[in-house]
Length: 157
Image (cartoon, rainbow, N blue to C red):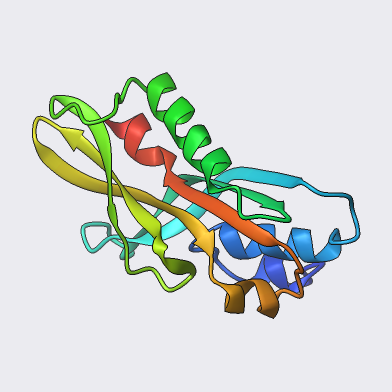
């Protein structure tokens, strides 16, 4: 684009969370709780592609309130996975959560979402309570929980 409306149109997005946090930053004066989601394309590195990257559908949802309300995001994950026919802890076609080391989220309150297909594990997303530094960097004053889920995996499988 030779004359983009904003800087956001000049970059390739590798995740949706930053955009959702910017939206919350612009709407932080709204009454709590704040619930925001986006389903859109992101770009992921893929050495098997000719250009070294590919488009992928991602879902990101965020819940902000006076408390982190992690159970709201975890409940959303359960509902999404059931809708996609991936039951909890079923090795044939299910999902589990494993501890994550993603620094965006608070240690001990974060997890990787693992899809299981015939016993093989595929990391398809992450969820947790946002780290206070992340919340502070976006000028937010409330606790937030979020989920980022690679929807493309479920389309392809």
